[in-house]
Length: 105
Image (tube, rainbow, N blue to C red; front, side):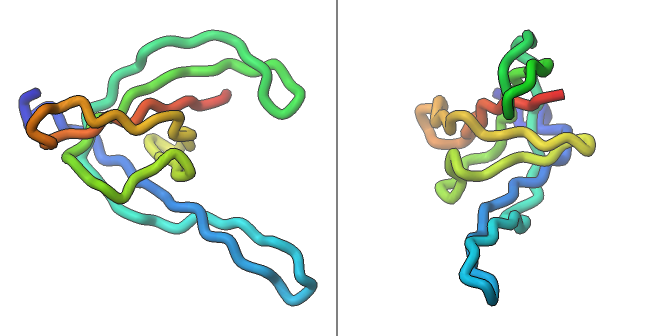
């Protein structure tokens, strides 16, 4: 892949869990990194999410190689939040990693 294809700015957010004053688990997201990425829309359809039928879009984000991204994180791009479904290390030289994501409209 040509590094010049990484022409979109994304934010990878990591899940943080803490316990509040009442003993309840509180989940929040914080920014792990702001990265340059190649964005490829793969497919779209309808699916069940939170007991509602919603439009689902599958999008792949390819970024420079990182070891600290996993499936419990999410990607923010163009004011949309994408749930990471899988992290694919497809390049033999470990130069790039692809984040397969899903967004619900």
